[in-house]
Length: 216
Image 1 (tube, one colour):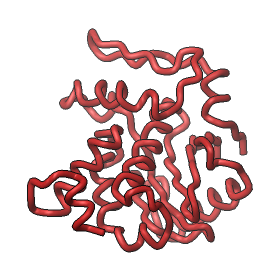
Image 2 (cartoon, rainbow, N blue to C red):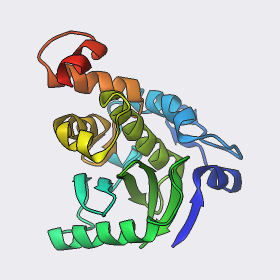
Image 3 (cartoon, rainbow, N blue to C red):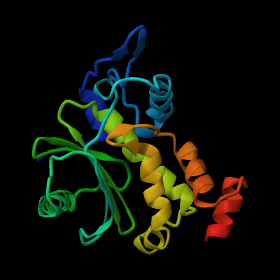
């Protein structure tokens, strides 16, 4: 497994611009940008082309939220790369085992695992993972991870641990639905994701803060 931090990766890699029609968006060219720093422009770029074909859009293979023992908290698979439950569980065990001793708490780390790009970050007893194909832009995968990570933090009012996640599992699953649809990245801005989830979780038009107070 080849592994490095996101900052190290963006220092070493020279990313090609995403180009569609007359629009061009450069991501992390010889920069040390973090996933959170590029979340807003990537989200803006994605939302600018609502009718792009799936082949043109950033896409991911799965999003995994595991506990400190590698057990499932919330997972979503978007492709048939792992066609059976046994294959999915084997992948989750492999990715958990191979990243367990890494220090992915201060910032996200990137790894090549079984031919896939995996970006991951840990907090408390939760392990967040996003998997993309080996031809996908790594910063986009990292931005999806950071968007999910930060949106969960907003929804759980920064009390991000397994117990809170299980108590609010409906919010986390809604969060994934707002970020990705069928593998296509829809949104990466945490505040937008959290607001949509909060609005959908209660049938009212109250503010995010009011909804979270009622929810918790």
